[in-house]
Length: 189
Image (cartoon, rainbow, N blue to C red; front, side, top):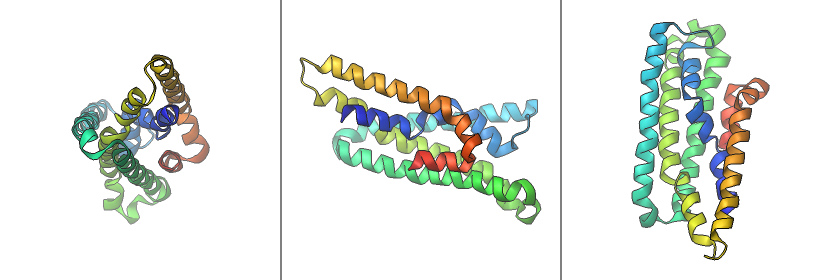
């Protein structure tokens, strides 16, 4: 159970959102081209709500973990993660399948892609922070007998970091292989 929770924590793509938030925002607001210096400054400012959302989610999670229970909090968190990743994928789907070639047909809709992406990322980080950030670590600290706890938590932590490496290292390749929208939908499954 401890290893499974740690793997799940990473397999929902948390560190791709954290590590690549600037790139994701760049793609959603300015496309795949090289941003101007002014656009880079805007992107730096746009990453602030993303980091703030993670903090807010974690603070809420700390408050709710004993009130709501581990299982309820983890399941609610996973539901929120699935919905927000679906929305993130939809924003990129709209951008790729409609806005790149046909932006004139729905200019307002295409102009909203970046804001939808930013909102989905912030909501994702709140949903993650509330449950999937604290629950795997707390459950690992509670489920193992004291005489083997350090070894078992070490194994679970190694699984977490290994999954982190695999997910983060494969993110860009996965985008190229299956598309940007499908990448987020895969993490949301």
